Length: 389
Image (cartoon, rainbow, N blue to C red):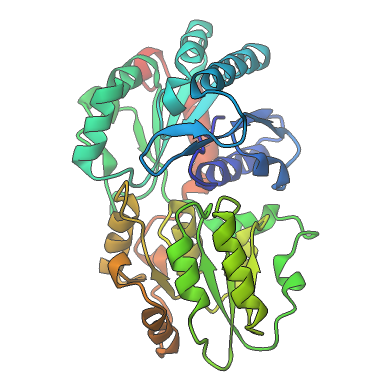
């Protein structure tokens, strides 16, 4: 399995959950996850599963890639990553390769590896989250990078981790008939399953030492672009019976984290956490959630049926905004436009008397994890060019 990462932890956490589910269903499986964030080693890892961690990338404000930590050129970093991936695949010799979102990997780093995998008969599964971006932006990117031809030449199956009742990427992104025939709607991934794999030794709630009261949780994904929401939440005068917890994510700017910690030092009901091994443990205990609208966060909110106010990212991609709008139209979440984000707006929502959310499972397919073992067996039966047996 391969996780491109770059901006946050979403790709890695999704791939880890899929890997843990597959290993639990078939203990004889051996899964190597190629990831690119140091935090991969901090998550709970099931027997039969291990990680190879690549030197990390980041994306600058102008959309360009750069090394996150290593003091080398981007050209040298990508050459190192590509050779490492290729060598790992040659040594591991997988029967199935499960990628995520980018058919050619970050900055096309999978190109040489894909030729090797095809020559040895490895099946290539491309996993896609429910929404990538607006259709014109996705098709423009695919045309620019040659991804459509790569998918036609190398990909045996496309797993869509979503429900077409929310968004249908096969139709919206105008996939050609031969690629559409390889697509399988897996369903959304029920995040309650994460509690089965969580390490009891890393209970973030126990260390918070919060006074009695309700819990309002602020989630920012990896944190790289969550500063405005975090600081707005920190400035909210919390209701008298409510505690606030902000999970900044490991990639938030250090200056912002420092400001948040200063605010929390003077607010007895506010806590700041940087990195949590398993956020689902906090989500389960939360009474209300204020968050961005990334795929994993959204799945956690809906899986645990929590009242949520989403403040989605709108640049450089509108994926989060589109997801938030679809879910709001289904009556599952509340949405605050980013240009209307203020502490007062969050405070008004926290003060409202909210009804219990409509159970998402009544209107959305959340059985994705249950289907994965069968879909893996289906991939093993696939013929040349994605022709399913």
